[in-house]
Length: 226
Image (cartoon, rainbow, N blue to C red; front, side):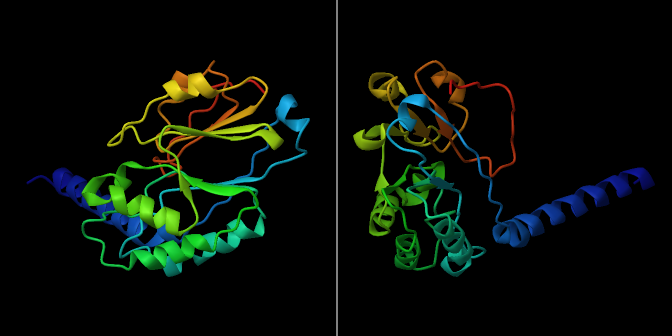
């Protein structure tokens, strides 16, 4: 075995170990808040500003427990959001999760929103027998789960479109084409971001998604009308 091969093998092993350590012990404790402002003339006639808090991919597991979620609760509530959106992947592997799901629901219930809290399925929320439990946990936590559904807030001219997961669920965008209105601010939220190209030109003002854990950014590909 050559020295070059040994060094390459050791480097690959070291990189793998570092990735495991990062995913298991570093990333779960990191919390980054990003704030953006999006305007729409029609909506602004009815509401000066609406604060929407978005979070996702909690992946509760042995590495990330409800107690670790306290930082997220404090941060979101400090923003006094009007609407809170959860974009899926609540528990990492429901079939092997040994924690108390009621504790997760209690933690979610402590998130406060002036108008409402809404959620969509992620791929981890469908697999491993999680499908029914996910909606029970979210509803116990005060969230309304949208499965290819639109919720209309007439007083603030906002339409919220929640898409089911496309990986293991039955996500589709046809309902958006039917429900989006030019005189409303149309906000779409989904677990996977890949569908953004399919909804451009469908009257959508903003789409938020998850799944990539903030690891993939493609700037300039989607230009929504303001």
